[in-house]
Image 1 (tube, rainbow, N blue to C red):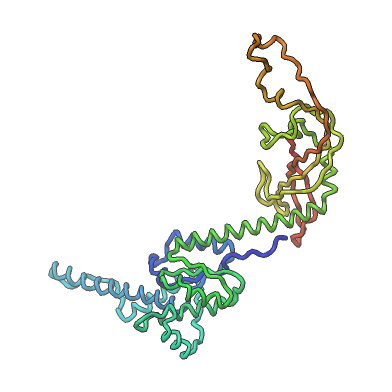
Image 2 (tube, one colour):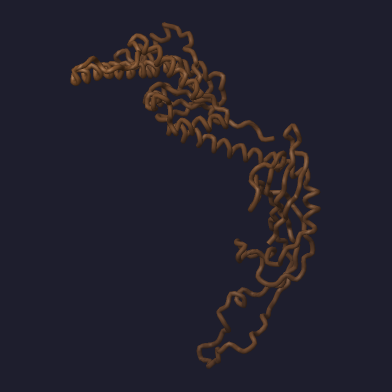
Length: 377
């Protein structure tokens, strides 16, 4: 079967992007990303620090809304000359833990797996901060982002030789200095600023990976077809072709092989299997059980004898006459037969399309060929 395909093996999410989403993560873009990631077995991870920051972000929002709710209840009570309106009994002291539990469960439900912060050397962090290696900046900023970059780098080591997708709204994550830290552990980073951009990049990478897979699969199928070449060539003996197919040109496109008439086909010689693609021209494109639809072409050489005429006879222009002569140029009732034909032998190569099914065994090895249609115009 086809060789391995290298699309992004993991997607890492920073809090700066998660905070762009609704609190319940109900985002069509995230659903679309999760669908693609699930289909292609792409892991989704959130560094522990980013998870904590996202939860704290919503704890703060909840606290402010809770304070506003209590204030509004008291104010309306004053307007009505009564005690504050009753609100749900949630103490401010309990609010943070309740929000943390709810938001953590939502991240888990979204398939975002928390990854721990690795043990980092203080001397290493100080060195990076002093030299302002991004994400460190002036004014001792960038400590949190640096920990996230290091967390992703440590976790991504397991995906060496593949690419990973980092989703962060922090512009420093796209910098050459940060990307180098991920490349140093053997992965190629793709960076997106939004979930929507992440979906686009992930699907584009998968489209390219799928193309690579199909190309690789086509090569494997071609090897199998070549191993069955004698069977395929034998089937071609029963194929009918037209003189127009051999001559070419016209509606078939390309240059005509000759200008004249076909006198004899001395021999038809199958030469090789050429183009191979998955799917049938006007039919099946998906696998059916253990069968894969394929279309391939067989190059055939036709050794022929043709009668050709001078191009001046074929391309028109009419009869030739001297300017001094008086001639009748009206078309005669019966057109004259073209004269000056020359007979010659030549070899013409044409491709014949074959639609077939290749059958796999339980180990995924191609073991059988079922020819469905052979098409020659």
